[in-house]
Image (cartoon, rainbow, N blue to C red):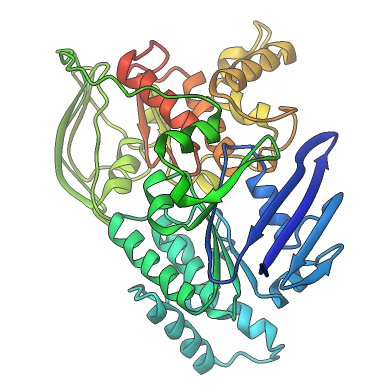
Length: 448
C-alpha cells in the first residue's frame, strides 16, 4: 500500500541518550493516525524529525514516495506537512490577524504590508473553523484555548497534506473539541492526513483509525484502533495495569483552610465557597467562565476588588504573589511556558527555585550538594524523564515540563495548591498515579 509518510528505523540520540531507537511510522492518505506514548517516549522527537527540525542519525524518511536523507523544515512544508505544537509557536506581541496572515505574507516575499490582504487571509482562517475572536486582539492577551484555536486556524490555511496536532484539545471544552473533530473529518474527506497526538483515551477512540504507541524511543504496537480498548491502551502506554479507582465516601474535615465571601475581581463576580483541610475542590466551567481569573485572584495576580478571603479563619489581603506565598498558597498555572518555568535554566534550578531560601546554609550560601539532593528527590518522586537535571528545562517534553512545575510547588510544601488545567500534556501514567494519591491518601506534602 502507498503511504503518504513512511519512516523506517529512525534513530536519534542526544548526548548519548537514545531518544529514538529504530522507530517505524506509516501514515496513509486521508488517515487520522494516533501517536501515543508516555512523556519522554519519543513522540516529540519523531514529530521534529518529520518536520525537518531534527535530522535522524539513522533511518529512512519517505514523503509521498520521495526519500529524504536530511529533510529541512522548508522541504517538510513544501511536502505539505504542518505542525501545531503544544507551545503554539505564535507571536504574542502581534495581533490575531497578523499571526494568521504572517506565514503567507512571508511566503510571497512582499516588501510592503497589504492590510486588505492580511484582513482577507485572517477572516478566511477563522471562518473555516467558525472561530469567533477579535482579530485585532494581541495574542498574548488571549486565554490558552483561544491561542490554540489561532494556531489551528493558521495551520489549516496552507495546502497541507499532513497536519500534526500535538495535544490539540488540552485547553478546549467539549464543545470546542467537537468543532475541531468536525474540521478533522472534513480534512479527511479531502484526503488530508492527521497525526493526532493525545493522552485522552475517549478522543483517540472517537477520531482515530490507526494507532502507534512508543515507549523509550521504540515501537510498542501499531494497529487499527478497532483492535484497541481502554485496558490495552493503558497497558501499552505504561507497561502497567491500573485497577479501578476505589470510590469511597470520606468525611469532610471540619477545619476550613480557605473561605471566599462575595469575591469580585476582573472576570469574576460574587464568588463564595469554602475549602476544607485535605479536600479536593473542583471548579469547572466553559471557556471564559472565570476559572482562570479566579485562580489568578487567589494567587494575587488579579487582586479582588471587593469581598473577603479568609485563610485559616483569619481575613487575609492577597494583593500580590508575595501575599499568596506567605499564606501558603501555590499555583500550577494554565500556561507553563510563559507562567510556570524559566525555560533557558536547568531542570534542577526550576525544581528548587521556590525553596531556595530554605536551602541556604547558616552563612547564607548555596550548598550545591543540598540542591542536587532536593532536585533528584523530586525527579524520582514525580517521574521526570531526563538523563541529566542540569539540562535546560526546555529540552524536556511538554508533559515532563509540567511535572517540573508540579515538583517546584510540592517542594515548597504549600497548604493550598491551585491546579489550573494541570493535566495539559501529561500522560495517563502520572494522571492515574496522581488520582490514586490525592483521592485515596492525601499526603502531608500538600494538604489541600
